[in-house]
Image 1 (cartoon, one colour):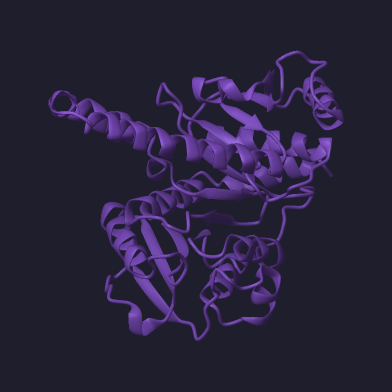
Image 2 (cartoon, rainbow, N blue to C red):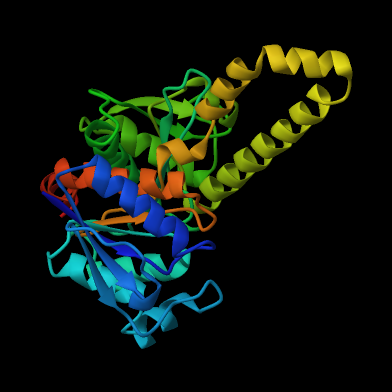
Amino acid sequence: MVKIAIDMMGGDDAPEIVLEAVEKAVNDFKDLEIILFGDQTKCTLKHGRVEVRHCTEEITMDDEPVRAIKRKKDSSMARMAEVVKAGEADGCVSAGNTGALMSAGLFIVGRIKGVERPALVLTLPTISGKGFVFMDVGANADAKPEHLLQYAQLGNIYAQKIRGVEQPSVGLLNIGTEAAKGNTLTKKAFSLMDEQNVFNFTGNVEAKGLMDDAADVVVTDGYTGNMILKNLEGVAKAMGKMLKTTLLSSFKNKIAAFVLRKDLNGLMSKMDYAEYGGSVLLGLNGIVVKAHGSSSAKAFYSAIRQAKIAGEQNIVETMRETVGKVNE
C-alpha cells in the first residue's frame, strides 16, 4: 500500500480539481491511500482510503515562499510535508506556490545526505511519443559542474525507476555537440560526466534535438532549463493557435479538419503535458511532486500516479544508496 499526502488547497482551481483527481486515483488504484490537507468544510469527497485533516491556514501564490513555510505552520502545504518527513506518507503532491513547495521540501522533508542541491525534473514529450527526462527546470538558477553531475545521477535513476528505461542515455544541454563547445560550466561538467562510469553519458545535446529523442535524460542548470521549458510551452501554444486558425479559415479547411479530427486529437494528446504528470523535486528524503498551478483534474491525477509509482519503486531509497554514497 502506498500512502500519498496531498495539498487540497494548492492551485488555481483547487479544491475542485484536486478532489476530482483524488477520487479517480483511489478508484483506479486499490493499493493507494490518500491524506488530504486543507479546509475540511470544502471537502466533498468521502472514501474509505481517503483521510481528511483540517488546516486553518493556506499558502497563496502571492506569499513569500520561505517566510510562508516558516510562519504558516498549520498550512496545508507545511502539514503535508511534515507527514512525509515523519515517514507517515511515502510522498506528497501540490499544485500550489512552487517556491513554497521547494522550501517545504528543503527545510521540512530535507535533502538526502551527499546531495548538494535538489533539482526539479520534468518529463517532456517528443515527436516519437517516447518523451525525455529534463532537469533542472528551475530549482537552482546557478549551478556548479558538480551539481550538473549530481543531476545526471539523479535523472538516470528517475528514468530507470519511473519511466522504465533500462539503460538511459544521458546528455548535457549545450550550444554544440562537440566536447570543446560551451562555457566554463558546461566544459567542466562534460569532463566530469565523461570520466564517470555510473551512467551512460552520450555527450552534448543541442536544444534543437530535444524533441527528436536526442537523449533519455537531458541535464542543464535551472536558469537555462526554465527558459527552455517556457519557450517550448510558448511555441506549442502558438502552433496550436496557428493550426486552429488555419483549419477554420475556409470551408475547404473545415472539411479537412473534420476528416482528420481523430489524427489531430491523437497529435494533441501526444504533446499534452497532462499525460506526464508534474515536476518532481529530486534529491530529497521523500517524494515531492509539483503539479502545474493551472492543472486540470487529468493533470493532477497524473501527478498523483507519478508519486505513487515513485513510492512503489522506492526511488528515494535507491538515491540514498547510490547518489548519496557516491557523493559523500
